[in-house]
Image 1 (spheres, rainbow, N blue to C red):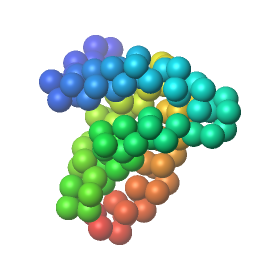
Image 2: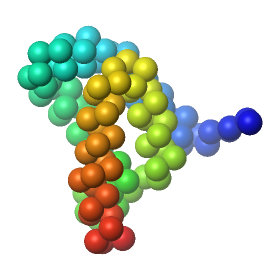
Image 3: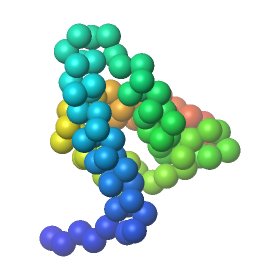
Length: 102
């Protein structure tokens, strides 16, 4: 099956790939030491990764799940544990917001 990404999906994937490449050591170190990485978490927050599918009027990016999957794929390539943290936050915390305001 051929899957063709839109330009927007490709841009989100590239942004995540850049973050994963530059933040690889920080991601691994933060999970190994169980102390988090405040700088990396702040960087992800600034990119909107903690509210990826939340509507913009509620402080999120308002993006599709398809776009989010590309981001998670790229982050997972660097550090699956960090990607799980982002995924859980978006699926549990943010989905509640989507259910009640969407």
